[in-house]
Image (tube, rainbow, N blue to C red; front, side):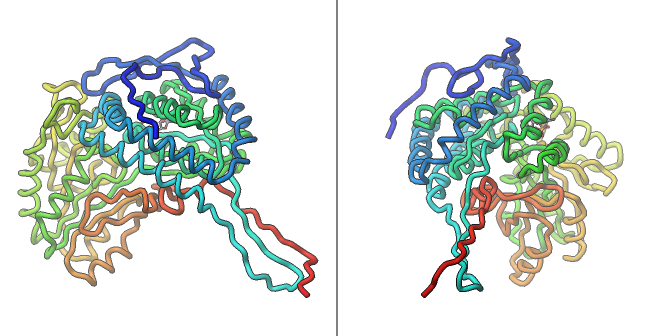
Length: 491
Ligand code: ADP
């Protein structure tokens, strides 16, 4: 096991074909710490011509990587995992610096992110095919799984490590090579992951990291989607961008996995344990300052317990400690960037102007810095308000009342999104009815934190296509090849 600890500075060049790479144009862009608004690094701003170099490298590397045994890939992923674990504090500091998370949360994300590398180092060896009994005596039927080829992985800023490892380790395990385009807000983590992958012995060209500014990102995304030398795309991010990539992938009929936005309902039925529901609500809503796609977006509370839930949620919210995530005791950091601040502000102002009650908060928290927002609690919410229909992605809890189970479910399902859903109930029959009726890909029953490497992550409706993690995660990166053996003399 490698006992490497890095104290040197972060890599700040792109990583292409095992080399630290500058943009041909010489252009760069700044990485900003959202807590301070200050630049913490400068990285190359690659354009499509640079990304073509990375695609070529991934194609060259695929020629040999696809021929490695599952055991060899498993061992390399395990080496990578061991280095990541050895450096978990270092990685957590990067998450806090780039994404603004409180350090304890960053450590949690690092453990979650690392667990995908461990998981797929194990899954690599279970990429089984199938032998199928044939209906004809002289024929034998086999189905084998083969890697898609080089793939493009486009990742968001809200989980800078986990969204990369969830995709890249599954791709590598399956025998694919990859070009990773990290979010412009959090490229350092991607580069550090590449550095550690190199240290783990993963050959050059198998992982490439292309950094690009928001301005250059559309051409990079388009090239990855439309290139005949890229055989699959896996994207986590907004529904809007996901739909664009889906269209672009149609030109080459490319496989695409999409993990898009949610609008998670969080239902609390009367008879539920309200204290546990409030604890789950806090974990689900305020983790990463509300910037997760599985964050509870609408608290849908049975009217009989509505006042109790709101009072208890407010008192829990009053205990949140806002600040720079690196400072001890802080458990709510900033929003990632100004466009996110403006979005949250717009949603809250829209609710105010349409008559909602702001029970708590409702403003920017500028004393902490320009990207901070107050924990906000809103009631008297109507269907025509943005906070009812849009994914908020901020520390804003929206509470809606209902009378019957049917009514609660109707509100929960009244959205074109379907990623996660949560509900609290102590009635076993109701638990089954509601679990089946919720139009989502993942359900938390009496639980507000559900993500797990072992379980399939993904959505229905406009929340996405495909599943990540779990024993299904590698399927995204493999094709089934059917092999028919004919003229077999059985006797
Ligand atoms: P957000 O608005 O929260 O940043 P995005 O969906 O825009 O969410 O970003 C998720 C990822 O998608 C990031 O890596 C971002 O750079 C990338 N992205 C944004 N626009 C495009 C695009 N037109 N083509 C490809 N990738 C894109």
